[in-house]
Image (cartoon, rainbow, N blue to C red; front, side, top):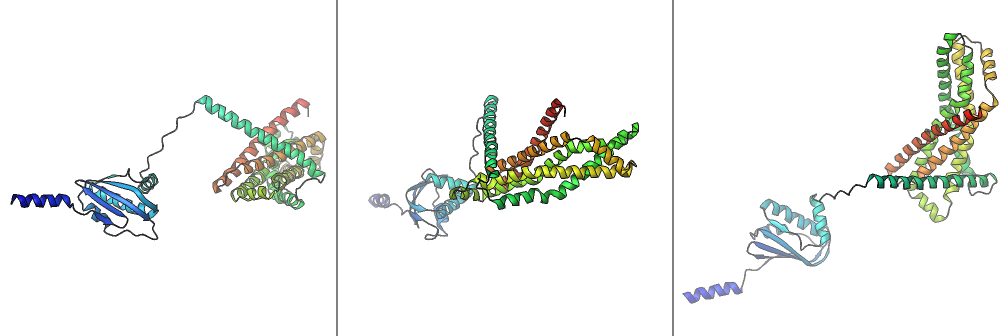
Length: 389
């Protein structure tokens, strides 16, 4: 009897129970520990997962499951689907998984599928001195790029005037039409209203002193010297400057600019120069037109509210405005036009390639243009005061 028991126990030790086996995997159980050996190719289009694979593995009663993946061939989402199903079922049953034997890329994808990717460690913040230095370097680099763009505009603009530029005439005419005739309605409305507002303000104050006639002088000098050039520039900043930046940024995102570079077409002559020349050339014309309609707006208000005769208003305006006032306004309009065009083109050229970058470029161009116009207007005011204009 004892011999029979010994023989039965020896036979049991020499012939352990067979390991569980499936398509591409073998599970060997050692007490509470199971090791799943993965082998072969796990490709979704050529391999499938048995419906009872996970229940069979969990039925072994193991408390921990490890993996051996050294024999794996090619694999894709089929392997991740198998591991994810096994992990979810193991969590439900309170079984621990040891994923160290899996390929590193498989472990990362498995973590991504579960949404348990550890948060990235927060980078150590830079000191105030370092941030200030980086801002300074960035500002210097941007100033150098803008200076190079201004220099190229002067050089290539002179060559274009002499007919030695690669710029196409049709592009220049299209930009001139967009920055000139197409902008007349909005320029008309704004400048007429500005002239009328100036007349109203002047009438309220000058009426107290019985100096109603000087409303004409106030409107004429304010419109010709400041308001026509300034308001037209602000209008063109929002209308043309933002459009230039958005157009070039869109070309950047659709890789049209890369294609132009690959073909060998000069970007400056093709994209930037027509816009700079068109806006710089049209701004003085828009300024003169803005002066006319602005004074007309003040004329209508003054005649209607102050009972001034039309001839007295015209005569007073003519005597108040001098050629130096128009010269100052023309100089402002030329400078404002070049600034708006250069700012819009520069912002568009350095924009990103996403759809959000297009809107950001347009916003940045408009803000930069308006701020630049106001700063330049203040500089002109200081210079004019110093020169006695």
